[in-house]
Amino acid sequence: MRTNITAITSYANALAAAISPTAFIILLIPYGLRWGLTSLLVPLHTPILSALIFSAATILGIAAHEALHVVGFVMFGHAPWREVRVGIKRSGIVTPFARCHATLTISAYRHAALLPGVTLGLIPGSTALVSGNGWLALWSALMGMGALGDVATFWLLRNIPSSTRICNGAIVGEGKFESEGAGEKI
Ligand SMILES: [Zn+2]
Image 1 (tube, rainbow, N blue to C red):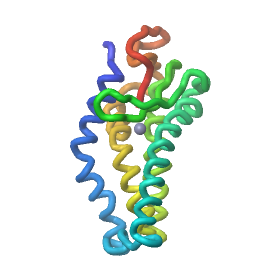
Image 2: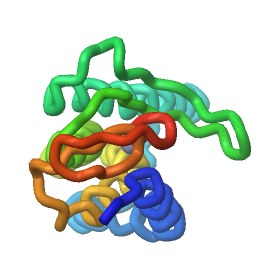
Image 3: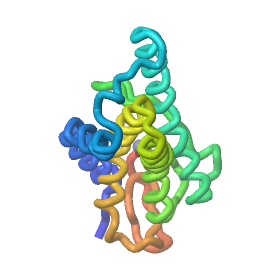
Image 4: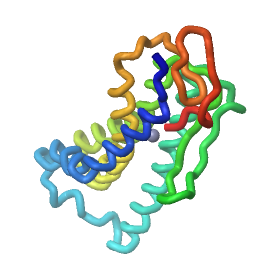
């Protein structure tokens, strides 16, 4: 049976968009229980400077998210650097994406999908929980929210055997590839 990876990631992202506001609040509950929600909004300096720093950190985080997908394609899937890239989809809502044109195992794809959420959400979020840094807690919750589509993709692909290879948006079985779409996008 042919499975379309692009359709699965689109479904995962739609699902994530629907639950994102709720998930953002849920991600902050452990921090709020330990340190109190008011500590989330203690300014770093002046409120305006704090807002500017937070906005810049968020933009950098979004860029780092896509860069980490690319690193994941290379690190887990041994994709050549020339076959991976980061881009911005401008039709409709402006959306950054990472793309890989090389053949990958589904295991490598799943790991590359989770890498930004772990690096930018889970690790800083755990650090914020231990240190009581409210800004880090807010930022990591935002980054975690941005990784929900990747987590949903990971979950929807969980039953596909790890050694299955994918290429250009489709699973085509063992060792046989067909071209379709425009590469794996996360
Ligand atoms: Zn992603």
